[in-house]
Amino acid sequence: MGKSTNTGEMILDGLKTLEYRGYDSWGIAIKKGNKLEVEKKVGKIGDSKITLGNSEIGVGHTRWATHGGVTVENAHPHLDCKNQIAVVHNGIIENFEELKKELIKKGHKFISETDTEVFPHLIEENLKKEGFASSVRDSFNVLKGLNAFVVVYAVSKEIIAVKNGSPLVVGLGKDGLFISSDSIGLIKYTRDMFFLKDNQMIILGEKPELLELPGGTKLPFSLERIDWKIEEVSMGKYKHFMIKEIFEQPKVIRKIASEKDEIGALGKVIKNSRGTFFIGAGTAYYAAIAGAYFFSKIAQKHVNTQPASEFNYLEDFLTDESLIIALSQSGETIDVVEPLQRAKTKGSKIASITNVLGSTIYRMSDYKLLLNAGPEKAVASTKAYVAKLSVLLMLAYSMNSEIDKASEVLLKAADEIDRLLEHIEDIKRITKSLSHTRDIYLIGRGLSYSLALEGAMKIKEVSYVHAEGFAGGELKHGPIALISKNTPCIVLAPNDETYGAIMSNAAEVKARGGMIIGLSYQNSSLFDHFIEIKDIQEGSIIAQIVPLQLIAYFLTLLKKYDPDKPRNLAKSVTVK
Ligand code: F6R
Image (cartoon, rainbow, N blue to C red; front, side, top):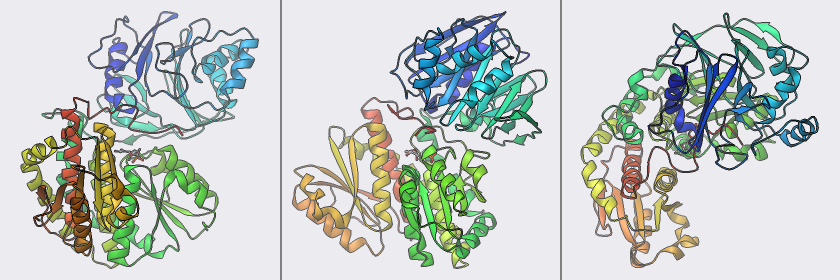
């Protein structure tokens, strides 16, 4: 909302910036006099234009379907019976079925299959007895689940936002007031932001008012300044964010190599903890596994790792001396937030390694470390993963007071990645040999095992080619049955204690007709294709992921898919 009247265009522009978070369908509502005008479409926003007229107040949403298929009716904003209240929502209203039944009994008509639609109808019902803000508050207070809403009311000049789950950030710019689920959507207009906390409601009008729920007590609020730059959220000379972010990795690593004090301080906390756990989801979990190897190998410290979504079922042994270290790019992943909340109730301490200042996980942590990788917009995580590996390596060395050594290794890794990126055409050529394959297997041992898992994740999530990573030693316990003539197998064979054994596994695959792509410091007659990664101790492990990211990227282009927006996925998974 603001001084400007092209609110619809601004919202569309903002949605384009946020589209990486969900891209099944989208919609915008603007206030026109005492009415709302709404436009909704199915599919990606792409170059869409909107036909809505001018206004000063509006709201928009780009959807990642949870309840109800991908249809125009299910796209947000959702409206009440009189088309006076428009609501956009992230999260899941767990008790929506019972609320819907009651509202239908009272005569409300529903047109979508979503859980969201109960909210505008609840507000409509409450408006019969009270004002806009109290209606939103009382409607919100009866919901179960973790949710965030923004509400526009046709006869009000205020926009109200409320949350107890998914993120919401308010931006105060010279041209108006903004609210978004991600600060990236706002930096074009302002860097001064306020991150709404759970159980808070903000009324954006002449003078923004912050209230605490359920009661509605007024709260003071202060702004934080975000230092991300506009260039960081645009593609620049690159065709996709994924390749742009792959190229940014050496810069990210060099920056982390210089952050000895901040990282060393967390290292001290880890040293004093009794029971340390790394948790994360997806790629962040694979970084956590690498972290456990770094800690064992470099610092001789045992660290437990679990996928965050499983940690809830495995945390009965936590105590007030335990330290949970959460790894998360977005800092919003609900599968990470939930076990942290439970761990907190046991008095355990939370440390976080995230990329987003002010994010939920960042805020709930006792010890906070930022990755400082800059905004990551491609759905497939690349630079944030490499940043996590780099921070974990620094942390592991800091335990032995050898953080300078980690910096040196990282600087060499950054140089090696620069060199690999100069030979990008070789990797493109090798990827062509995979263009008709149905399955790709990756094997590694030790640290490289975690890289095999992450490499497989990158390939499958963007190219939709089935890829699986295995520990080399596990091969003959089952997976080798999958190898037949020309089955591609990527072998990760750095110059470390795993080299001899992983090359034996490569020979076993080769003997069964497998086609081997070797990533190693030296060529071998077993390899059908060879990608050289120079030997720089654990630095070679970090460099090793880059050819795998590039194979995933080029394979996706060969298949003519969009690497930045893989199907069914969203960048920030804020629902369970
Ligand atoms: C895969 C990927 C996901 C995320 C996962 C956790 O490329 O990006 O697996 O790693 O959804 O996300 P964050 O790190 O934001 O918690």
